[in-house]
Amino acid sequence: MLLPKDWTLLPGKLLEGDVLLATREKISSESDLWTTGLSMSIDRNGAKDSGQKASDYARSLAQEASEKAGEGATPIKESEAGLFHEIRFDFPVAGDQPLLVTEVLKANDKTGTLAVILWQSPKEEAQQLHDLREQVLAGIKLDPTQ
Image (cartoon, rainbow, N blue to C red; front, side, top):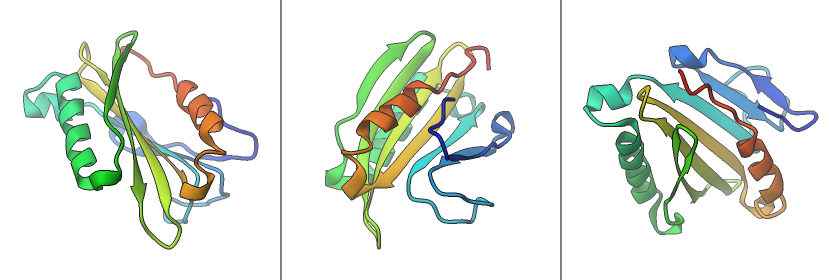
């Protein structure tokens, strides 16, 4: 993954169900607060346990998350990129500092693996960070055999 200069990476053991964090803020542990960056997890068993193809499983998760996000969620978009079926949508999160979250689910039907990527940034900075977000998300390369 290509990270912007001065960002912090807290790599997790993704294939063991851990979460990777990449943030603009300097953080020392997963409990520290951050506003701009992404989290990524790998789900190797959810689709299999549900009895669905990974892309169908991802679609059902995205639809459920979009419904929970409410009226502020953008329509779900789907595309293909090599062996990965990609599902994506944006939604706002209210709070002391309102956020805009982009959720990207990358499903590999061949392996049954699902990568769940959440990009978040302050809502008022979302437009300014659009190009950076797209660059970072495009820089995530997943191994199609995992």
